[in-house]
Length: 75
Image (cartoon, rainbow, N blue to C red; front, top):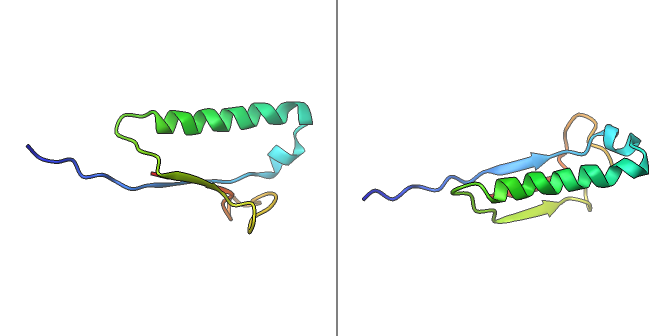
């Protein structure tokens, strides 16, 4: 029987200006959707999330061009 080789991947996410432009009443919906996306990735067959990181020390605020990234999912 052949052992399946694991693939490591790094998902990078950015917070764009549109998030900061939202009325406060809509922000929780975005945060819940982001949590749902992370949960969906974690629950996929064969996926093992090693960790997540929110880079709020070196990257605060918007990522104007999608870079620098604001959060990461390592699997």
